[in-house]
Amino acid sequence: MSETIKTRRFWIFAAGTIVTIYALILVGGIVRATGSGMGCPDWPTCFGRWIPPTSESQLPANYQQIYADRGYLETTFNVRKTWTEYLNRLLGVFTGFTILLTLLFSLPFRRHDATVTWLALAGFVLVCVQGWLGSRVVASNLHPGLITLHMLLAQVIVGLVIAAIIRSARPHFRQISTERLSRFAYPLIVLAMVLGLLQLVLGTQVREAVDLIAKQSNYVNRHLWIDNLPMIFSVHKYFAIALVVLNGWIILHLVSHTASTVLQWLNWFLAFLILGTIVMGMSMDKLNLPIYAQPLHLWMASLIFGSQLAIMMILRYARSTNAIGNVVTAT
Image (cartoon, rainbow, N blue to C red; front, side):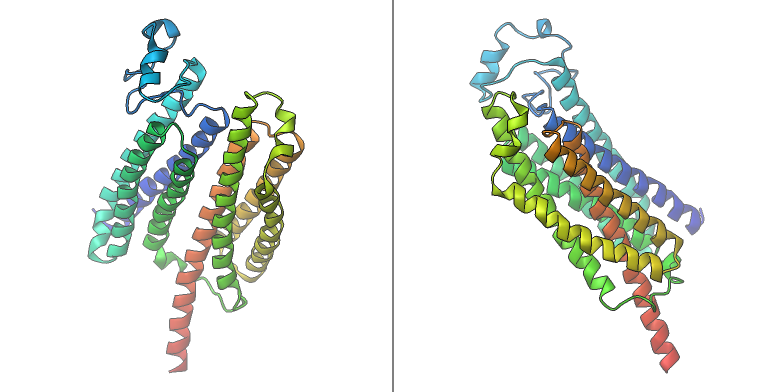
């Protein structure tokens, strides 16, 4: 089998893994926004079954007491929440298989670019850790800190797969000229990524505060939740303005100073995502935290980080190639 076919096969499975992970992030957001996290109060089974029940009649009459004895005092069966959480778990298992295949198809790179294989291996190992962490989230009765760690680990995993696929495609970025770019462009992209991750963490803290207020209000009077949020909500909201300005400059600068089709598409996609997060953020602020907006807001924020990482790595390889070319020309 030719190296070209092996490389393309790796790209297909790596891209499929990226799509699957982002789908999992979206579904995870839906689970949290709908309060379905304890739809399955045990792990890896769901109410002690490998296939969840479809009605309460399929459970023991004293099932609430059974789970109360295990530490789940508020366990009640809700078929929608149960199957929402179960489908989230199934997608997690599917993600494990896709990243395993990505690792297997990265093995040919170990002979000439072992970094690709090591990145895929790190992603696979962390997916296994993520599965274990998911079980701890359930066992802790949805501890907010563990939920935040669960989300951040998903960003690391998808970042590793993106890094692997970009690394494997390095030869295709050698023709990208970076001579017209400002010397501040690359450092500012790195800064935007770091600040974006910080904004994600702030957002999860806001989400935890929303969960607490919702639980205290018995999930009613939704229009009062925003007014009761702590100061971190204002920090998260106004910090977004600085991020929009920073990313806006980066997008406009790269679009006008690079001729690469890949970079052009990635930058316009980044612009679309930033606009989408603004719309979702405003809808949460003005429409009393509608359920649809919360998972979409997190999902788009995650995609922003992935897009920035791809842009940063492409520029990194293009800059290194340009630098080598300049040294050769000078000598």
